Length: 637
Picture 1 (tube, helix red, strand yellow):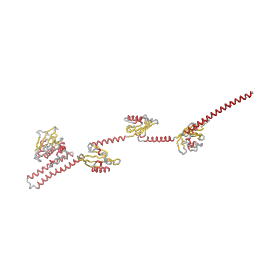
Picture 2 (picture 1 turned 90 degrees about the vertical axis):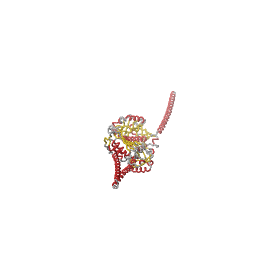
Picture 3 (picture 1 turned 135 degrees about the vertical axis):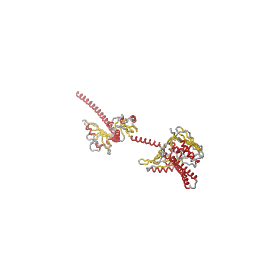
């Protein structure tokens, strides 16, 4: 019984153990299922994670190179089917080798460490991409590398950017080294980092002498304060543009440059260094200075000229003018920018066109023309000179001169020649006629008639002699050969002798002499003083009525002897007085018709008086006579 009970108890215990064991098994199964579910969920999460990666991901057997696992990005949409990594990504039949296709598996098996390498991968269509492969080892229970986890990054664009950057850097290095302008790199601290060959050649330093030196070494002392201000501006703004400075070479030579600088920055916008370019404008500055000097000289020359200067372009268009006076005859706005043909009359345009045609052949052209200005006829001479640039005609420079006065004098000269010819011919005719008559008719003429003929001939010969004498005096003056033979002399007898000589021409006039008893002597050329008196007395006789009074007076005033010749003639207007002592002038008055004269006497008087250091003038009123006065220096003065 006891045995049965014992057996029963054992059975109960065994059943309890079996129940507990079942409970444990059931709990273990539940835990297993939970773990499997957890693993499944983790696998599913991992799969989703790997599939969500845009980069290729692999698990590769390091022995067989077989891809055990890969995401969609890795297989390019194909089915793996135990593909090898080198077949899938390189289209190769054997493992990768060499620098272009370095195998990360070999490196991981060797080092048992993660590796990073670059590859060229080929997709199903044979397109090549630059890939950066990151490999990580998976170890077995013995610590050997059994598999490799790898993921790839497409670095094609980065490689292209790096290559482009390298090309850009190379181009910049080439530009910097070979640029003919002076190039520098300067740190934010103002130290020189690099200098190109062009700059070194000019400033005379070796590169190693300048590296890490202050900018101050290349700038002249007078430019350094400005250079410092510009450096501060560059640090603040990153830019300096076309600033003029003076650099100094190792030998002390100065060069003028235009500085431009930009800042090279890092990703954070911090300045790394400058790229500074100096454009040497020394020769240009010198050329500009020479041009300025030339312009100043030209302006001075033009300002000293009484001429007008015009510049025309190749189409005969006015582009510039310069006048030394205010008198331009027409406002500049009426002709600047316009063609010559739009401004000037046709007759002048014809002359200008002919001149331009000569200029185009390289010839200088000259012509004269006239214009009606302010109711007066103005004459001008124009000289056109061509301008060429690189062998091409670009325009003309015209120098225009007012020759109205010259034309007037030429006309006066022509009139004078005609008048003198007449004045010479008239006495010669009288002389020739009188002599011929005396010779051919002498037997029939009475002695008195013969003497009269000879007196007439002598009188005309004397008149002719005085005319020729005046011409000779003017000729000497024009040739700067008018010499005086001055001596101390008394004018009283000279005046009296001259009046006697004049009386032979006209006995109808009354001559009154007013000379003080005590009269100082003068220092003069006797023959020239006699000519002055003769001319003035002859004029008084010509322009005074028959029987009129002619007065000669003398007095001493302030170191000079003043001699006056007064008449009771027709007088002279103010306008006539203004030009009376000018060349070839005769009074224009209808009452003077028939009065002989070449208009030389008063001009000769003026030249001779001034040669003695005196002066001559006239005081006159119409119809009330005239008084001509002149001075001669006293002997003691």
